[in-house]
Image (tube, rainbow over all chains, first blue to last red; front, side, top):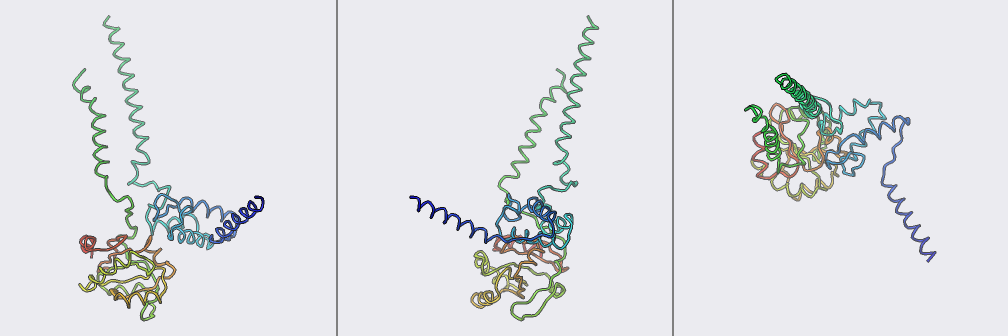
Length: 140
Length: 172
């Protein structure tokens, strides 16, 4: 029993090694670059498997895009340059935080506009009721 | 209750009807559809090797072609072998197709073209997929329409067949 257990543990350990080997190891110039890389790949959407970011996806294209982000960061590109590069090729679609523009104005600000309308109509109703009550009282 | 106040009570219903109509019109649409960012733009710069002649070609070499298709394919891609037959039909009709051998090995590609026939005017090797990245490709097969001004007008992801071609040929 004990031997079997040890054997099992060993085998499980082996599978961990083989898994680790398939992942490409990236080396960065600084810790900041590594942080930038990790936040960048978490924020870019995979164009193939559309509900994942490129960090989570194992699609070919996601691997390519990760490599691209990595090489651009190591070549000294800024975050905006990398995002511009991606948007030029895959459209705004790849941004999980879309830029504010005329086409998505309603999506960004619509809720606030509706909230504003709600507040104004609420105030109007209160105001009207108060006035009506007052005119009733005056009639009496 | 005044007339206008009565009318106002219908407002929520109107909003509901509007939203329902909007959602209904979107039903059944391809959720994977993603417009290409390159529509209306010239093809990106490239320097690639031609498969059969081993010549180095750049984007400028494609400019005198007139309208053409750019087709990304690879011998590793099962859907590409389905598509191949229809590409042969298009080539027979005189459509210029530029093949991009995407993330593939030249030897395998040569064998493929020899066995199945060659629908391509030129086949450019994109072994690392860099040109694919510049074109915003997400896989193969993928086909772009480039008009006579060298501007990309249409992109189709997936197999080109007679049905897809009906729509696609309008953009040539």
